[in-house]
Image (cartoon, rainbow, N blue to C red; front, side, top):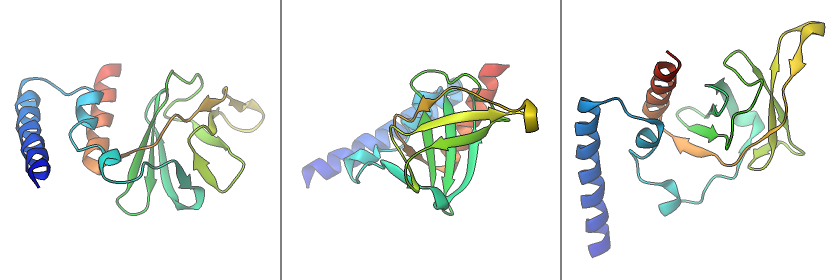
Length: 148
């Protein structure tokens, strides 16, 4: 029971520190993703997403893709290195052998239309990180401000 109380104290302490940091300076991606306890601590890590459950895909930049799965469930894919040809206007092409999109499967960015369309190189999915809608909004703002 003591460890539970300690975990709550740590999380509450982290929340106030983050609030103070937000007042001082804009958050970076790691700080945004660190605002909640790691899911691995209390649930099984998501290794796959059923493709028919994906409601929306947003390519945020060459390294970040957000998946909306279900009503209020979001996953972020952070690629290990930038994926050439992947941009906010890209259509995502999945390269998987099943009806699930899993870690280690590949994605590609498809750009253009008709005979002028081209597909970028394969990029492997390292993991899916569950995020909240608020975290997604902060991530979008952070990435947008980096581009400016």
